[in-house]
Amino acid sequence: MNFIVVGCGRVGAELSFSLFKNGHQVVVVDVRQAAFNRLHPDFRGRTVEGEALSADVLERAGITKADGIAVVTNSDTMNAVIGHTIRVHYSNVKQVIVRNYDPAMRLMLESFGLQIVSSTAWGAERVQELLIDPSFRAVFSAGNGEVELYEMYISPKWDGKNLSALLDGCKDIACAALTRAGRAELPSPASTLKSGDVLTVSATLEGVKTLRTRIQEG
Image (tube, rainbow, N blue to C red; front, side, top):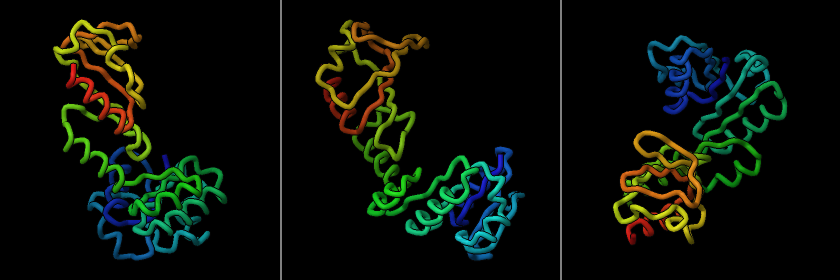
């Protein structure tokens, strides 16, 4: 696939090389030639120096053949403007992803209807989870960590009880799977739990906090 990465800072350089290693065609755009020095020595994609809001620069980067664009400069405002411009004027681009760094700017980015990735917000959520209780392992993060998939072990306190008893009164939680002896199934509220089972739930942070308390209480 053909991808364009706008911004060759730490995130842009890492992303560009990762895409390249996975066999994709990558073009990196930055306003400063010196920024390309951050790229891995083995990177074999193209680089284009210039302002990404320039139609000429985007044309040179191959915008008309791009499958996706990641806008990851260090300016949230610039990311929003570039992302919105590309989405409006280049309908052939299937995915436009923009980086958010300052949490205070997220509402502005979301107002454009853009798909955003906030490393700051996601990182804060993840660190908080690990500090509170690392036994609840997050295996997938949706959005910027507002909803995640967690794996949790059923303790002996809940052996023989059913799933509905465990989840009774718990909000913002949906059960995705119950795994026993390596075999997963879609559980029903009447499913009987056994010590050592692995329960996979989709939940907000508040939801998983409630479930954690419920499990500890038994």
